[in-house]
Image (cartoon, rainbow, N blue to C red; front, side, top):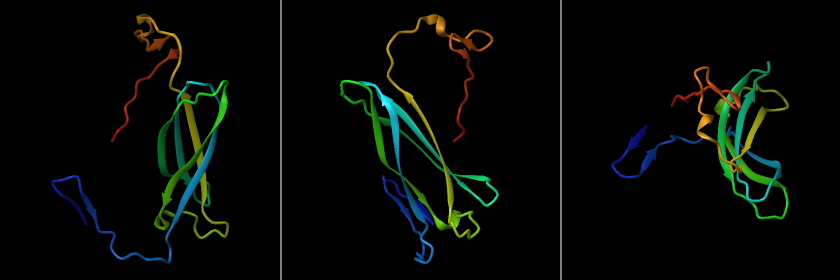
Length: 141
């Protein structure tokens, strides 16, 4: 039962809670290599769960901006506590002795860069830019 009040409060009744199969919390730590001083990095973490046949099931996506550092040279940046909540009811392992299996994909890019781009960077009729073909997509809610 989900109720939305007229304020900023959201009430959710989770019903009776069973401690027999509480699920898990996956806590990841990743290292982004060679981040240069003064550069922020956008990071995406995509988590899927694998069943016995290797088929993947979406379990979550996290995106964040890693703040710039002020060291004298490029450094590795450790990002800790990327946590995913994994309810037992989503378990697709089929009771495998080794437990649940996950696949983590990381995407990272530098947010800050030097240089300017002239107006000619706009796409031409063939959807080409000086960087190659470009396709504009939108994400469905």
